[in-house]
Length: 326
Image (cartoon, rainbow, N blue to C red; front, side):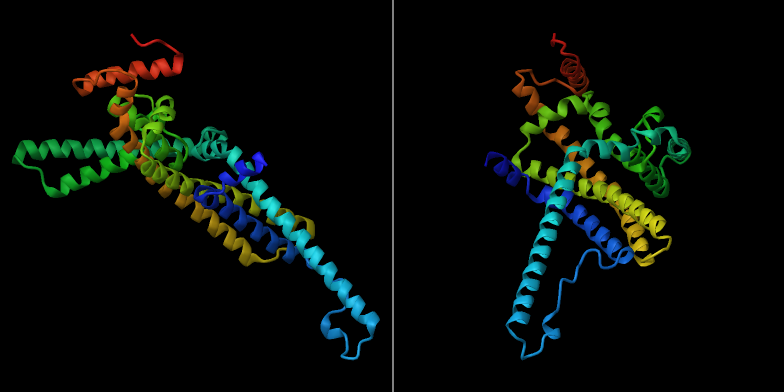
């Protein structure tokens, strides 16, 4: 009874959006694939239908029809029960491996040993060079004309925005995927601004966040989970398609393959956009509630930002290495 109540608690918006919905899409695609490659596998004909029995059917025929309808009902109920069980089972598995899947998509995996990493680092270098050039133009215009043109200002701010939101500040911190770099930029923001380590502080500071703001963060995270889970499930669907094609020796439902590829690309795009929104929400937590955390820890409020950075560096080390604060 207790386990059932605990299970019911996880069925909220985050679970439905982040896990249940992509699993339902995946199972639907799988059923369509099976029905196209292996017809009459999912649905069985147990006997005569109503139309095959004449109006003057005798008692035996009526009995056969009743048994047939009962068998159809039992078969449908059994298959529906299995589908519901599989849907929730796969959803729970995705919850268990949520962090692992996110880290794989970020690039903490074999992706870090592929040309993707060099590609992202080259993109980082390209933006850094453009930013450096526009800075020089900015300084030159200021020196020669006494004022900087609006075109130069806009280009500088656009490049700076891309640099800050899509990449971490240092080249050695760049990850192989856009998704990973967006999240890493959000993680590093508190360190660059306030000197604190986001990973070690997050589990504590989130407890001070008001319920409404915490719910907003959960909703943004659910959107990230939906995109990540859909991405990997569509990869699994492509593997199913290839396996079924190999077994049968023929291509079926090419429209479905195109739909799967579309969902895969859509999931990748949504992952980046949802990660950016989630990251912005994470940043606001450190901006708004870090002083509340200092107060809860009984520490005096710092006089300036430089002193605060020293505070948070020591606090982050104490959380990570169990080192007592001086």
